[in-house]
Image (cartoon, helix red, strand yellow):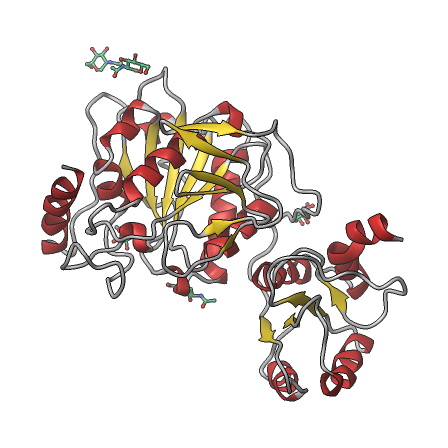
Amino acid sequence: MRVSTLATLFSTLLGAATALPVIEKRENTTSSEALGLSSISGLNVTYSSPTNASLPNVVIFATGGTIAGSSASNTDTTGYQAGVVGVAALVQAVPELLGIANVVGSQISNIGSQDMNATIVLRMAKLANEILCSEGSEVDGLVITHGTDTMEETAYFMDATVNCQKPVILVGAMRPSTAISADGPANLLQAVTLAADPAARDRGAMVVLNDRIAAAAYVVKSNANTLETFRAVEQGYLGMFLSSKPVFYYPPVQPTFKRTFDVSNITELPLVDVLYGHQDFDYLLIRAAVADGAKGIVIAGTGAGSQTTPSMPDIDALIAKGFPVVASSKVNVGAVVPDNDKSSFIRAGFQNPVKSRMQLQLALASGYTLDEIRTSFEGILYDYLY
Ligand SMILES: *[C@@H]1O[C@H](CO)[C@@H](O)[C@H](O)[C@H]1NC(C)=O
Ligand SMILES: *[C@@H]1O[C@H](CO)[C@@H](O)[C@H](O)[C@H]1NC(C)=O
Ligand SMILES: *[C@@H]1O[C@H](CO)[C@@H](O)[C@H](O)[C@H]1NC(C)=O
Ligand SMILES: *[C@@H]1O[C@H](CO)[C@@H](O)[C@H](O)[C@H]1NC(C)=O
Ligand SMILES: *[C@@H]1O[C@H](CO)[C@@H](O)[C@H](O)[C@H]1NC(C)=O
């Protein structure tokens, strides 16, 4: 039944490519007015549920991705077009949401997450701080619908930059909304339920997919195709959903290695490149990255972040000049361990390459010196070990 409802809805929607934003106003006040969100510049509210004072308030940032994807065939789980369906249609496809929370939907972008970029994540982090963390905010939680390909990156970024106890939930889908057994509607319902739940507070940003709740700090996409893809291999899940209700395995806790950044004065993020380690890796790509304007480099090194002998003179010369070179691991699981003497390249600890890139961007944008960048990555693990 869900599939046919969705199919009808989406064929209507797709027929009108420039469908007008839907603003529902069944009562006198819509949620966005009641929550004082109508005046926030750049929020682009395109859906606002009627207000029910006895329900919690959840804002949805819709960015696109498979959850908003569409295909002509209901058996396609590849080759579909991501980022087609708007936030109003997403919410209306899951009317159960409106019994859980007052929902305000903002269309931030409508792109596959391979096109998510520094401009948009920074804008979302600033908006999220304004909406969730400003004095007197009555918004209980934020949900971000997002493509899964780079979800762990945006999740990391929000975790590092939005810290006022309120939950930020990243959610997506592995199957487009037109597929048989599309996972998006249930995932969205669970994400909104989680964002509205007081038990979700003080846990940082989280990723919801396939009935699981994972900490943004640790989660990685581990399978390119299947529903069972977001995992924190070593650290495990924070919880799961039973009958679409979140169940946490432990009381609220923040990741040991978490570093936070204040983005209020950051207007852009510097260019940081990730280079992939392999046999015969030499200095060529390092020099190309620097020549092309990179302000920092992350090397997805082999194993525990080892670097090839031919690349080391360039790496050490850059470090000596104060240019940050961070070694993470292409293995994605386990730690790149700091050296006792804190020389040479910076070790990323448990931070994987793509999250290390964002941490380095945030540290650079915050004006950190090379030593401060080193401490940001190595400090906590160094104190464990030495
Ligand atoms: C909505 O507006 C009507 C007419 O102005 C008024 O009678 C009613 O009390 C209002 N309801 C609420 C919940 O404010
Ligand atoms: C408001 O929400 C409460 C709690 O879920 C529910 O009992 C009530 O019926 C809702 N009111 C309206 C007008 O929908
Ligand atoms: C707001 O969202 C609508 C609906 O998706 C879109 O057409 C419009 O371009 C968006 N505006 C901005 C400023 O992002
Ligand atoms: C990010 O994408 C948006 C539109 O999708 C574009 O306007 C913006 O310039 C891009 N930013 C960067 C840094 O590429
Ligand atoms: C941002 O800039 C303002 C004005 O210069 C300053 O008062 C504030 O401390 C800065 N915030 C941060 C986090 O640097």
